[in-house]
Image (cartoon, rainbow, N blue to C red; front, side, top):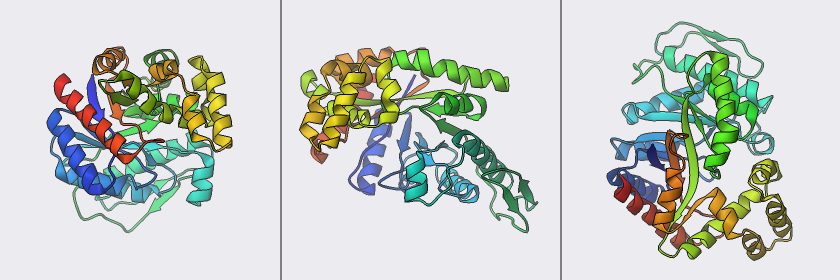
Amino acid sequence: MRLDLAPWGASIAELVAVSVAAERAGAGGIWLPELHRSATVPLAAVAAATSTVTVGTAIALGFVRSPMITALEALDLDEIADGRLVLGLGSGVRRLNESWHHAEFGRPVRHLREAVAAVRTIVAHADQGEPIELDGAYEPVSIRHYRRPFPPRRREIPIHIASTGPLMTRLAGEIGDGWIAHELGSPAYLREVVLPELDAGARRAGRPRPQVVASACCVPHPDGARARRWAAGLVGFYATVRTYEPFFDFHGFLDQARACQAAFRAGDADALVAAVPDAMVDALTLAGTPAEVRERLAAYRGSADVIKLSPPVHYLSDDVTRNVQQEIIHMLGDIT
């Protein structure tokens, strides 16, 4: 089971420095998200500064770029990384796509299926100079009189699909080279909810289950009680999203999630964090003493191929996040 890092940095320079330190400590991969920064530009800097880790987007939004731009960025990143890129794609939510990016959302499963097929086709054939014609309700492609005058580092770049719902998870099992989890999760949820859907999609395609990339907010600290409180803000933040209620209900924390929603509506950050009990943190994160974190990591064995670790950022100072991240890297060095 490989341990990766989704690093935090106040600057791209810090992201690069943390990624290099994680690589030296034994991390298997570095994953960068898309929200406050683009997914691709900082990853190019990380790819250029590292040499052994997988570098991946976790995630890039699949509908806000054309398949052509996504494919060209993937080809460039894979060249910089010398064949180490994993392109993680996800749908995002309707409001973000339509209001923030003026992008069509469509029926997300069908839309992402078309986007992935188009990106794969362009990656494989962009340098060959022949027409590329793809039908589609959302991502039709008609490319003529074009030839990318550089050979690709690889004609097949792995594409992982992120999901929280069953239909998109099945799509990941059917067409993805891997599946990427949400930042909150648990071994039980992975085994009982996610893997059956991934396997159903894989069976539909007649192929093995794709790579499983679990994700976890990770807070190893000698003071386990403090570690749990640092993680509580992140748990509470995601609990405010009503579409995640089935996830919290599965773990028996629906009432606590609704208390977080009420505190959020009231603008009371302290009450939001206080509404998250330690038991909720223990169930949904890897927060506690280093020994406790290692024990919870071990519970993923046999279910996850990779665990993507990230420090908490919600309702915390930059210094706390920075210090937790250093503890994660220290733990990686001890484990690997």
